[in-house]
Image (cartoon, rainbow over all chains, first blue to last red):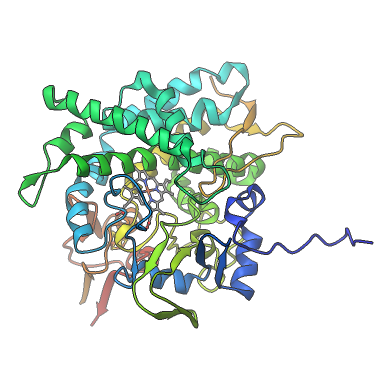
Length: 401
Length: 63
Ligand code: HEM
Ligand code: SF4
């Protein structure tokens, strides 16, 4: 007979990252790993990774790019993604031209537009008393904001989201990026971005596509491959991560009325609430795997040149050795150094945009829809790696006209 | 007197300092932290910034 009283202790293994159970509730896996197996070498016969869970080790890997490199496997196809697959000093050159395009000052100009878009979307469902949160808010809000900023035509919103979904999630439960579904989606976006760049060459506009065309690196314009590598990464990063964060946050707030009420009563707490929810939820599970360049050790375990390290950001952010009571979501934490946006030189380029979108969308929503819940019987499903709640129905208990 | 600085080698532009202690720090055009020139610093505010900088880039020397 099996003992049904005590649920099985979750154990992190190679496939965990790709499994919905892990994505829905990763904390016990992280804890198990930190306690018993903080540096875990695991493979499936084809690929092998070294997964790391402790804040200390993750901190080290993120801050030693020479030893733990971001450069891609030889097997990777397509133009190298800029700047994520570069190490310093090349990487720094790219950030110097990209950072000003995503600086807090530059992003602040988008504030009114984001608020208008948020309210426009809310207008579309507020009177119905319920919504399909992902499809009606978490997906369109950040995607439309980002597409406008880049200069991607807004009428193609659905096509762009669909391509992004196929690239990120089309490979199913594999870690491989050679899947035909993904390959085809990549070709499709490459073609479209190349066309749009051509259009902007002929007819410049006030958007990032145009700005990238007019940008110089080391005194020369970007090559076609460089433009594609930059736009491709921005496309992938900009169209998914804020959606993931929003859906994680609202699933949390819908089930934690005390936290939600705090946001309603004290909107000034929103910036702190966003940081704390980013820490706790860590919607982006990991950074790009880092390639070990020479024999070293990590947390006492040897790692070899050629090994691929996977730092689990959510585990670092919930590590009791650096966060007091990590399992408590406390908007008033005085000390908060989370790695939800990564750390070191690759710290998220879009973090200032992401924060602004998260702040405004929480503020406008809770001003108008202060009370809401998830209907009984709904099982939430979290996508793997980028923790998006794919279907999040919300019923409103109170709305303000 | 005290000296407040950002170690530019460590700062990677998380922007936490100027969010939690806007009287002491501002963003440069890249989003990296800059110390605002000031006559006196509020100890509590400095501490808040130090504790929120993910890169341990804020250096405060009390004399
Ligand atoms: C809450 C939302 C977001 C989260 C949690 C997030 C998370 C991350 C993380 C963890 C990294 C580090 C990857 C690594 O070290 O390998 C990263 C890098 C990056 N992110 Fe984000 N991101 C978000 C939003 C955005 C947005 C909206 C954009 C669009 C502009 C963006 C663009 C980038 C780029 C271009 C990089 C690569 C930076 C580099 O390699 O220097 N991110 N992001
Ligand atoms: S919080 Fe730290 S890393 Fe971020 S901008 Fe300020 S000093 Fe730089």
